Amino acid sequence: MTSLRRPLATIALAATAVMLAGCSSTPPEPTPSIPPGITAPPPTAPATAAPPAPESALPAVIAGVDTSGWQQVPVPSGAATFRIPADWSVAEVGEGLDVLRGDGQRQLGYAEGVSAGDGTCVDASGTPVGWRTIGLDRQDVSIEGASGVAFGAAALQLGDQWVFSMGLLPADAAQRPRCPIVNAFETASGLISFGSEVVASGSGPGAPWAIASAAAAEDYVASDEYAQLRAVLMSLELLQG
Image (cartoon, rainbow, N blue to C red):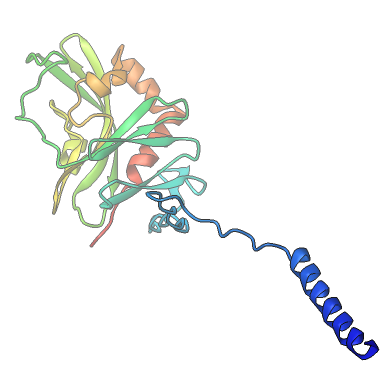
């Protein structure tokens, strides 16, 4: 009897150990799953940096104004670039841009493929009127991709109203301004306008350019703001290709 008890006791102890080991094991963690009909979001694509503005070939000082701290602004079509003061901005208008002063007021407009009108001199209401002009400033502008371009500023009288006009236009038109004043010049891809208005009338977006008198126009030409705007206009560069 003694020889049989010892093996049985050993077997019993082994069985007990196995049972205890089974009771102490940790159940496996459930595998997370996505409910039916729901898909996992795609991985977020890494952010891409905005393309740098094209480098300018113009000097820092334009028409006596230091533009070294200004922004270089590309136009929506990629056909051109120009500079504006650091605290100014632009707003897309159609296929072009409005240039906004630091307080948000529109100053200039850039547009491509514009119409020069039919050559009729009219006032803000579209009525033909008597007119006279006073040339106030003219500067030659070298623009690769266009020839015979100048900056011009003039006071234009339309009936009883005076309008101040400034922009890029053919050199002879800047030298001898006549009504209608069209701030636009010819390029291989069509007319480009960069100025206070495409056709000076003192209406619509150009309404702020309606002035009280010729004397007011002459005073404005002596202002720092005028000098800034002239530098903006003369900073235009056409991009080839």
